[in-house]
Image 1 (cartoon, helix red, strand yellow):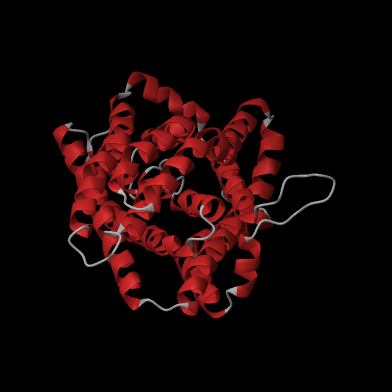
Image 2 (image 1 turned 30 degrees about the vertical axis):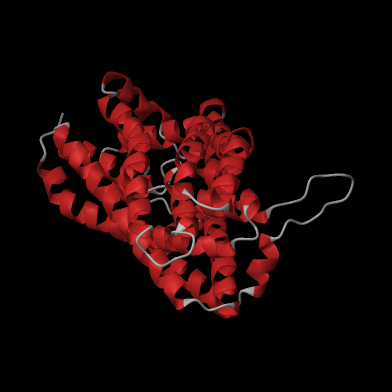
Length: 354
């Protein structure tokens, strides 16, 4: 156990200070993107490198850094508990695939009743790209705040991330027929390229590399690496938020479409609400104890919206308006997560120890 009298390293103190103010920092990132989108728009573009090196995608690199940091902070020993109690993780993985198949057709049915000429296919494409992503690594933070079961949440984040080269293309291709016009063809093409390309190189490999470091590095070197990578990853996540927001808000400022903004907010809110409600209902049906139920509910509602935004930026650069519902979902899922942990914290605290 660490001696509480020992002062934290400067990097640890800076990271702790920023994490406590992360919500305000995210809002500030959105404000800067609204007032000064030009640097973010420049960062969104691929940048050519000399000597035949592939073009540099800033957003992909930042996402890889965030996921490497997430893998680096996984409590590997705690995962052994899941081998003795795998029900929640297996249920979470099934729900991760089933919930999009339940929600997206319902939302598509509602959007076809709107006067939009494409039946809301643009908004629906963005929602599909969100729900097809793995569980957000940030869900582990909310699990800690709500006294949830951390090994269950870490297991769900890791399992959904490692399986994403299979699950992401599967969901994209399965749900693409709900779209009309060129959106269906675009989503199918994105699904075919996402598995071996985006999901593997940008999502799985960085997370697996971080996890491998926790296993092979000596404690002294791991502590040093954490002290360097974690602050950079927190800062990188804010820069990534700014870059994604610049793409969406910059496009919106050039061509203001208030109805699109309102529709994006409404659709994101509906999908987010239904995801959390179905996750909570599944936890009750399975009769999980309060900490595990909290983790399962959060995992069902919190998808890696940053990954979907990066996928839109790299695969659909001509459709920056699709980032609007993604940004809305990113904010709404954090609000919903706060509601979940606030409601379940008293029950979790009174639950008997195993």
